[in-house]
Length: 364
Image 1 (spheres, rainbow, N blue to C red):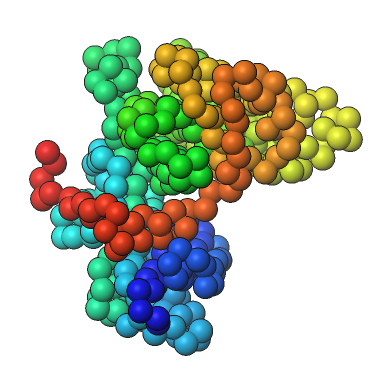
Image 2: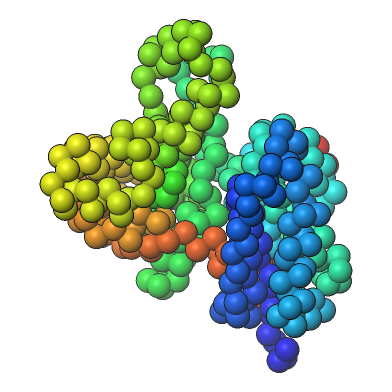
């Protein structure tokens, strides 16, 4: 390792895969995706997700060993941030408070909860620090954004904060302006869709893709509340099945029985009118959410950033321009790039561009 070079290992656990990459000063040395078979994952059915840490850590260790990676050259290890308490944006050191909170899984079980554990396991052997960057629980909302319409519960700020924040900062760097000086809308279009408004360096509102907003390839987004209540009490489905219908079997899959946007576009090109109508409806809903965030920013918008896997679709982006292109210049950042985004967060800390944060022992 050359003087001044920072090597960072980034780890992103998914529900059926573990993706990790080794980066040197932000440039990828190698990126690996380990797919886990149904048989492997069946061992952990109905068990807390953190019980998978030894299984996944061993697979990462084996791959790094086979590649001749010297852990002692690592300047830091970063894992995907899980379902923590509401937090300001930033890069967080993995500490005991974070591990304890993720162990309790009070905000839900999710593969991302493994990120801090996997990073800590490897960082300890490497003799370096473990981090997480912009977990899904990043919350910078003003109070008025929290009202749901009933005193029974508040809106919850859960979003694709990692990619959203990274894209906003990359755009700021491209145009040579500080991120806090920009007024941005960021549309993250992936398996879940979240559209956010950014002002003064804060994400001041965002759609929670599990409960709100546009439908995506597999999520239903916002659904009619009265009809949902009737379905829940119909006796036809368990709570677990309804959750699956909304979060894994909704959206394109519910209407067209596929989660593959490319396959949908092929059907449209072949004259499938049903596919065309559903595709148009999804773009229409995305545009409505962008319009809502334009209102949040008072119509004063420097740029509309479109990111996520769906941003690769020329037709989707073209149709979206027809709806909202008049609001602000549209800039594309296709893909999710979560591993580089995590590495960039740690690199900013190592270079002294920002300070690492600590999760306090008790919620503030």
